[in-house]
Length: 111
Image (tube, rainbow, N blue to C red):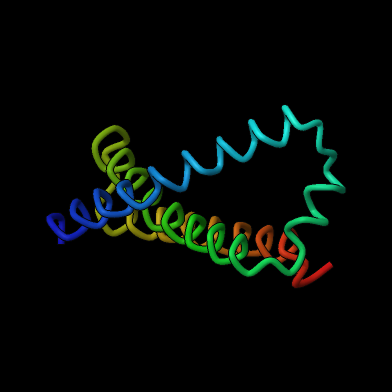
């Protein structure tokens, strides 16, 4: 299981790298262009490309981060692997729900 988690974390890191670069580029573009939050939301509302992009970004983060937190809980706090897995899995679920909720709002799928 450890090898699979290691591989999954490395795979999600590879996925997140372009997501982060595009996200930072969009932020720089928006700031330099003087866009307001309202203008940004009007551009993202109903845009399935951005919804898919940020939805996959959230999914990769929600898989990647809990693996690292699990390792910290085991190695630094000396928690048992089962307890550390439960805590990190719960944290990953929270990230997933909050992230997808934000994507839905920014994408205009809910208000």
